[in-house]
Amino acid sequence: MNIIKITLLSLSLATSYGIYATTALAAEATASSSVNVSETISHLEKALVEIAKSDFNTAQVHLKAARTSGEKITGSEIVVKQAGALVIQGQIKAKLGDIKAASEELNKALALYKSL
Image 1 (spheres, rainbow, N blue to C red):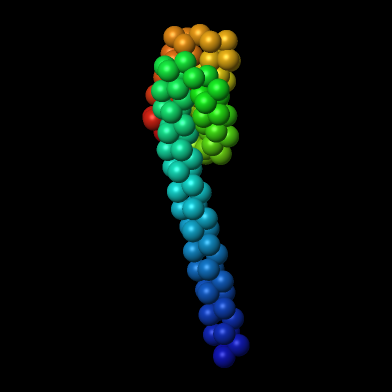
Image 2: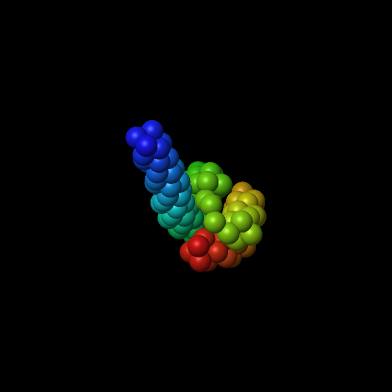
């Protein structure tokens, strides 16, 4: 009888630990994703300011950082891919010196990231 009690206690402890560990990992993933979204938005806003000043070198640094943090975002894959593509297009247009087109693309990407 004692063996059955010990076995049941061990199984219940193992099950509760497994549930706790899974929940903790899910909470950690959600928290890191929201940090990456805010970091990406921050870099995009800084890039837009630099593009408006026609400082394309600094804007490129912020756009690269935005792309890097944008790759780490989890959530709606379609929205993340669309926003990433818009950042790439904005980066290309900024390299060409097209302030208006680059700003339009980056503003669209910014709106998508803010929707997450």
